[in-house]
Image 1 (spheres, rainbow, N blue to C red):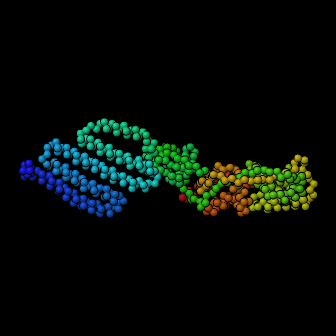
Image 2: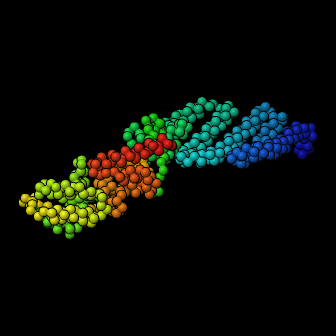
Image 3: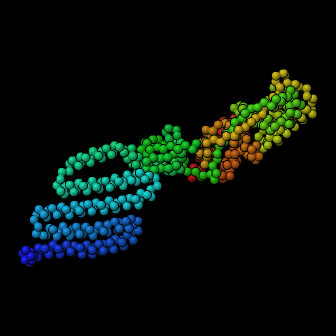
Length: 468
């Protein structure tokens, strides 16, 4: 038996040796080619400074040598003395191994490169990143399977039909996601909107664009509410960009309101002497009620009534001269209730020193002193810049407006309102702050005052836009 084998080898040594030598030659050539090629690529990449160079080199270096071995084995088989059937069989095996190796390498390379670049897109959520990567991987796997089936002469029609049905189902299930992604690309490519833009939608909703992703756009309204609009819907609607990002205040403006509760004091005056005597000693909250709270209560009248005392003196006592003098006292000129009280008493006593107190109010029309109890309540409205400020100002109550415009002077003892202080100190808008500070409250209703402040701020914003 051993003699027969040796005799066969001696007669057919070329049949064995030549394919083996060819295979070894492919190994040597593969090693030399890989070394030369990758040295060249490293030089090229170092010059171009491509960020994905290390990923490409590390991912393809080992498979490149494997592909050389596969090609060497295939060539050795083809030049051997094997039967055509075996050559075809081994050829398909080597071809299948090459296709699997190539597909795996491409998938690994693309996955690593996509991770490198997609992670820099901050607006792209992790779910969308995974969807893109998995979609690419599935595409290459499907293509590889079809090539293998064709290589082994197997029918591909059933698989193609299954893949088509599966693809249609997947597209239908994720149609909204796909539409949003394409719409997101359209938004980014045409720069339709940017983070920080103040926009108004066709539904009349408006606010700042706080975040843009590949799926949706997040909008924050002036009252601190947040809502999401899918990209596909956003592209199809009418959107008005009211302005680009504005200077942010160093401290946001927080809006407050307050409620007034009335409380009877049990005190009443029938004539001027009693009015002056009681007014001199009552609590500040009583003086506040009959001056500031009185003006707010009748804020819809233009010109506004000055105070409750002037109205009573004119109507109940019939002393129009003194009533006019009391009405001429500028309630908002005084930064403290004490100073206002002193001025009211002085005017009444000055009149009493000129003539005797002979007028008495009819029964039932005495002046009843009422105390005002205030409760300050924070609202959820906050403004970080001028545009948010003017939009919140449109929706806050009259009580809020009165609190920040008029009561601020008493609260801060600065003779100026909260709005002007914030504009000057936190936004460095001194000119606008001064314009609001000098508004005469006697020439406007509170709604008229609101409109005037909004007009001043919007005029300032238009001026800033034209300069920008």
